[in-house]
Amino acid sequence: MKTKKDDRMTIEVLERQVESSTRLAEESQKEMYEALEYLRYTNRFKENARYKKSDFWAYLDDRFAIKEKHYLEYVRVYTRFPAQAMEYGVGMVARIERICGSKKIKMVFDEIEREQSSHKKPLSRAKIEQIIQKWKWYSPDNKV
Image (cartoon, rainbow, N blue to C red; front, side, top):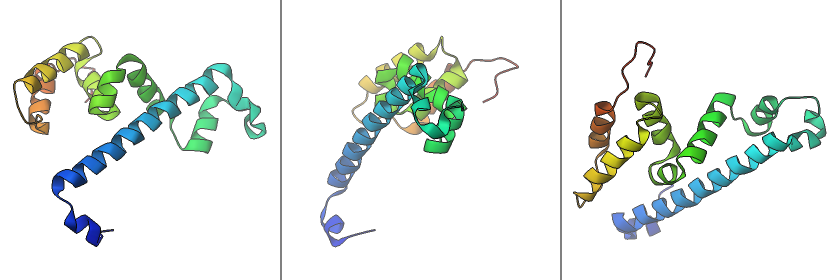
């Protein structure tokens, strides 16, 4: 999908366009999960005649191809860590919570932000991974 217009733009301009689009997509996704949570909480999804006798999870899977586990994880992250979800992405926040545990997640993000403030460039993925592993929650049940 490369165009001649793209060839004339600098990498910085192209990256800013992608970041802008990503931010809009993330905001839309958050709004989508808020609306879905409203439908679940109020049972209004049953107003759709096809799902009058179904549970929310069947509705969610059929209409939006979202699995229960995925949905619950996204809602939890958006609810408990909205700023981090928007800054780092829901996937990273959920991964940190899985690896480090919900009690340590704030400490992990505090360290990431401290480390980031001491650098001019964004932290590398490897450096963030190193911080995550430092705070890793060790348990025989911890399946990462």
